[in-house]
Amino acid sequence: MKVPFAVLAVALIAGVPGAEAQTADLRPTWQLKPALTTMGSFDESTDLPFGTTRVEAEEPSPAANVAAGLTFGREAARDSVRGSLFGLVRSPLDGGDRSFFGASRVEATRLFGRKGQLTLTDGFKVQGRPQLEVSDYWGNAATLRGEWGRATGRGFSLQIGDRRRTMSELDLLGFSRQSAGLGLFSRVGGRGRAELSADLQHYSASTATGERLVMGAEFGAITRVGVATVRLAWFQPMSDRRRVVDDVDAARQAIELGDIGRTEFFEILALQGSFGAVLGDAYFLDPLQSDSDEWDFGRRKQVLTGFVSRRLGVDTTAAAFLRLQHKRGPNLLLPEGASDAAPFSDDRFELRSALRHDVGPRLSLLLQGAYVKNWSEIPSLEFFRLLGAFGVQIHF
Image (cartoon, rainbow, N blue to C red; front, side, top):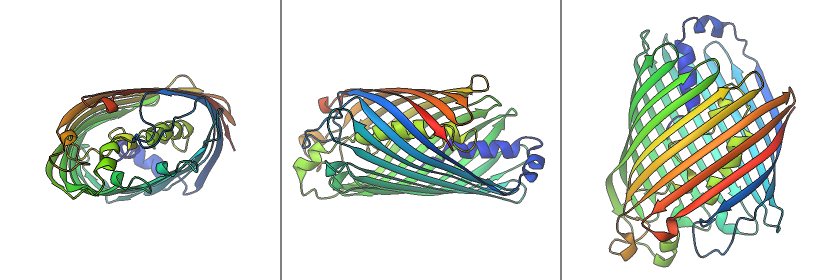
């Protein structure tokens, strides 16, 4: 799993002239920021809400959403802790099909030596819909990253990670994945950084196991008014071994999971304005992965992403995220030789935008929209999704 852009922010700040003196003045006190968010939303799409034709269900729209969040942090001279807790209840205006979503994330950083840094990140997500158990889901992702740099701004990093996902009623879509990687980075100018990385991943799932190589290039910059980052990643399968599939019909239908992508939409929106200027816009955003299409083992994938956040005056912040993705390869959910297990390709376009305006120290207005379009050689995977939300966030 790629470390979120917040880690890049910490590294950049550590490399800015005079930052050590400023950091040394920080007192190790905890900061807590609870918030309550209410939003109205609409959801128009043509995809399968749960990635399977066995469940005849729709996502009623419009809906009311209530979310509670707590962001916290502690900054000291040589270490820091940042974290968020988040819970959301979605209640459609038409029907009683409520959904529940929870997430937590903790990031701890420790500086060692003159230019060394160790970062531990752990995140957890859980989702449930009492009326439809098929969507129950939990996932956990942990990463440990060590980074060593020089006064010139150049250096290297090592990282290991573990990612697990479980679905109680769709076992075929669960998996575990371990990774180990190396990165080379260099400072660009006073506020930018470029990095080349390579990760070796091993995965284990109900229908297949194997390895793949993930190669990436990234450039990011932080200024006083905003953040910008561009990433290019190449996922290359190396060795895939199929396992015996007991229920071929179930595997044939469990192709895509769209419901998680919707809850991510609200999660990112509600966490805007959390502890830290960078974390408020990108803390939970990992633009290389999406829970809604992460079961893509055995397929060659290229992903280009861009993220920008900018302050428009003192009280307003705008952010935009763009994702272009191409995948081709076999469907490893099915046994080898099945007619629909042959290699196929699909392409995805995703655009998100958000606007936040602080009315006062205790109240913010939130506006967000998202559009996803998927083209595929498999008709059931062709869809579009349009989401929008408007609400208010109360800070305590």
